[in-house]
Image (cartoon, rainbow, N blue to C red; front, side, top):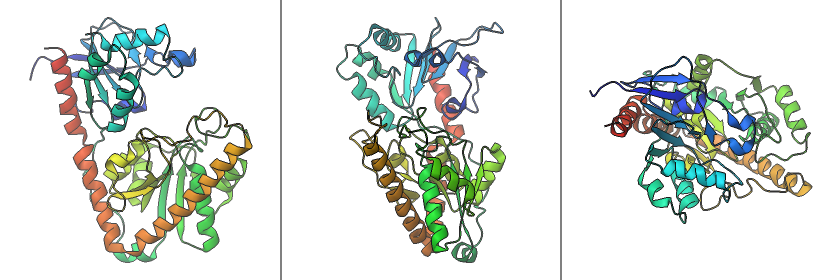
Length: 380
């Protein structure tokens, strides 16, 4: 091993999936200043807590460009720099030149979807060649639990309750309303579906797809509390959530807008296939009816839902479109669940394939070797 390096990295959920969990180097996690709290225009940059004072060799950050004299490596999930609506400003050019500068050693997309967005973002810019020369793709990672599939035997799969888990705090964007409507349909039909629904149920302006009328989701949220086949949890500790995922028939993420969906790989690592929409990076590693289920949704050439970020989210027309998509996807999800569980052997193959995909693509030890190599090449 080369000399031990001292790496500065950020707190928060995304970096945990996109950095080394088992590095041979000294990786110190510190809080950073979320500049978007001052203005959304500043979301793409940050500074780290300088205390206690310590000498670092390198910064490894995610989505936010560090304001520092240190060299850095950069991970990102969609656009980089993140400066929505500022692409023709001097501030944007300064951020792009910071990425093109030799101090930026590597730019790592978390998916081919993210890489495609990045290439499109910079393809005609004078700094494109410098940025693309640094660009690589590395999927997020997770510690794969060394445990067998703990779902009950084939007889119980065929005749017992169908256990589903949904997790996503943005209720509209991540498909919470779709899951509630599917649960309502299942209850009306007398189907033995049980759903653990983990969400703080954030709706409205914080999401970039929700209808903006404040009470648009009011009926959905009432049903969430009243339907007998849903258990709603505002949050769960991680061990409890992982246990629920391991015992579920499917994890649910019928999302309108996700770059990757880290909960998906957590489910697959526990042998549990995922039902999700065919958008963002999800079709890169979920193969329909082989290791999960992909619900059709209309996307553009980059893989984003075609109606994302529309300017008419406060209109009845958009509300009607969104409600019709909720209904369509709820019906499709319920149909696909029933079809998949009718053939127990095929379903068990899907569980095995989900686990195999997690082992091949998302293993934390392989990711740690990759990131350690990046650090060592950055500081020869």
